[in-house]
Image 1 (cartoon, helix red, strand yellow):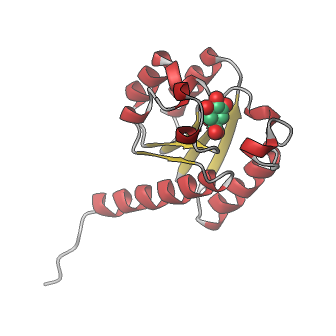
Image 2 (cartoon, rainbow, N blue to C red):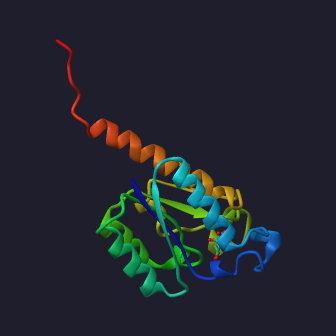
Image 3 (tube, rainbow, N blue to C red):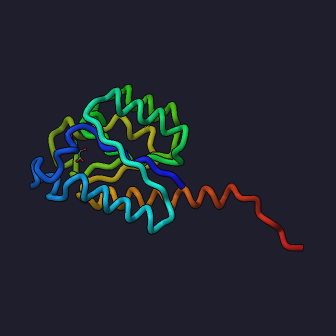
Length: 156
Ligand code: DQA
């Protein structure tokens, strides 16, 4: 099982960036925890962060050549990037959207996600644990699907 974890703009600054909102865990630390979770579940994890919309879209396109699913924190692009939404819809990989902060308890522009309609589900407000929930859920969903796709042998 292969998973792509994508971090959008400004998330390279985690740990230093508004820690009262996003927590004190840095991106490397979060990635390490997610690598561990993937390993424990027999999954392969690749991680990508970019501040640029085009690079994120390229990574989503690339993912359909190798990944079984995506966990994405789109950062602010999630609120308005129709291009990112279309990329996720185009590759049609099972995807979970993540936000560290509770976007519904913040500024009004954060209430809207343009990618929510093309993902399996969204998790927000749990800090770095939002990523953990998303990873564990995606692994569970992918293995359910794998099992359902296996031909069942009916005993004689
Ligand atoms: C965020 C929430 C977004 O509104 C914000 O622009 C971010 C981070 C989060 O993880 O809480 O960059 O995606």
